[in-house]
Structures are given as structure tokens and as C-alpha cells.
Image (cartoon, rainbow, N blue to C red; front, side, top):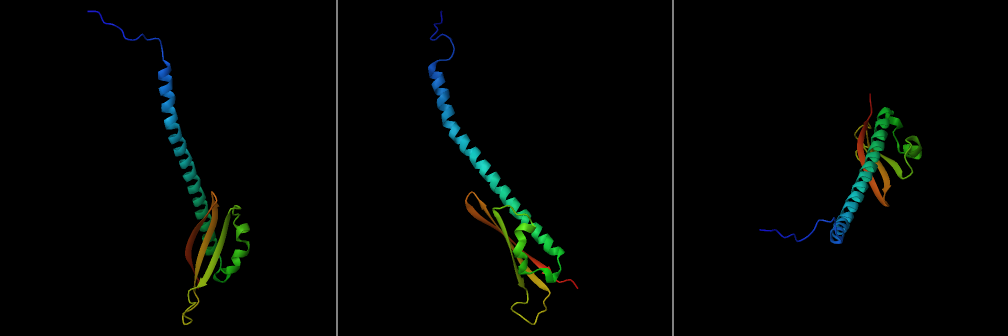
Length: 136
């Protein structure tokens, strides 16, 4: 019995090239969009980590201050003091714990530290609260 060859092996044909280009085109968009999303999420996480870093840095510096020094006047030069980048801004809100009840002693302040920043044209906010207790 003699086997008959249907096709000779002379290399790749134009059909093979067209199929390879079609497969490449189908997956190039998917791979490109996945890469863009990954880069975008990485940058967003990095910006959020910077906001957390500055909030903690401000909170730690208020721990070192005297009880009487912790006031709303800290907001005047907060951006320069902590060298915040230009798309970041910080705000400290100070409330006395005994604000509603004057029978309590003035020994606790509630600090609300807010970091506002821009990421890809959207405003983001990171807020922490802490207590400042008067040391005796």
C-alpha cells in the first residue's frame, strides 16, 4: 500500500499567518486593558498609603505636643510643616470632650485629622480620630 501525501511541508502558509495575527489581535486588547487596570490600582494604593503616612505623622507629632498647644491654630501652616505634596491637604479639627457637659474636667481633646488628595481627577479623603489626654 502506498500512502498518498495531501500536502507538502514547504513552510508556513498565508492562512497560518492570518490565524496568528487574528489570535494576537484578540488578546492584545485584553492584555493591554489588564495592564492599565493594574497600573491604575497600584498608583491608587500608593496615593492612599501616602495619605495614611501623613495622617499618622501628624497624629504622632500631636502626641509630642503639650495639651494646651493642640488647637485649631495648627491648621495655619500644616502643609508646610509636614511638607505635603501639592495635591494633598490636611486639616485638624479639635473638640473638647467636655464640650456638652461643663461638669466634666477639661482633660481630653478629640482630634479629627483629615487628609484630602486628588487622584486621577477624583477627590479622595482619609480621616482618623484620636484622643489627646492631658498629662498630670
